Image (cartoon, rainbow, N blue to C red; front, side):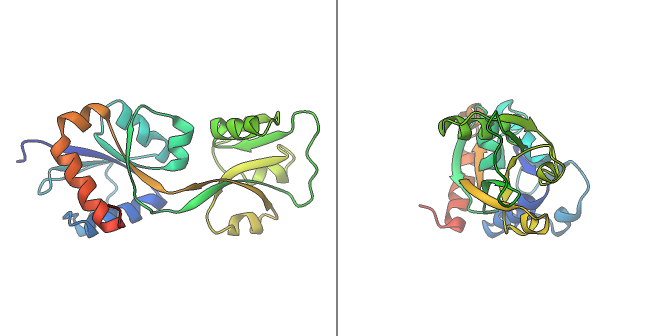
Length: 211
């Protein structure tokens, strides 16, 4: 039994598979059936690592509160959540970007146009920086639906291939920011488990090509 565990919060979904592949390339012995497990907490005793599988938006919260030492989170989540964590490494996985989109040739409402998004803080900051006053409508999913049913004039959402926008008859108007997944750490864990944290950063850095 290992004396000290390193607890890592991993997001379910798209980032998960790429993150696990990256950890394996970095030499971590992740069991073959790890990817198919339905458990929410998985221990890899040989490595002294405990994984917590969480909703992407919750990963920085777990790390900030110290229930996870380390997390892997998209930059979109980091920008939206603004949690008290250290961002240590750009993993260069799950590349995409945040963009403003809507129906083709749709004219914005002059009086506080409505913008639907899962990222109210990011969207508010973006339009405020442009000197535009908008009404933000927070949605948790199917953001593309908002312009189609007249709920919003525009949306702010993640774009990967752009296929979802096209299939729903929407067009991209403005790119806001490029997104990749980042390795984040709890500030206390960074000090108390520095050897384990720095070892992981070093091994992952070699895989992603950062010095």
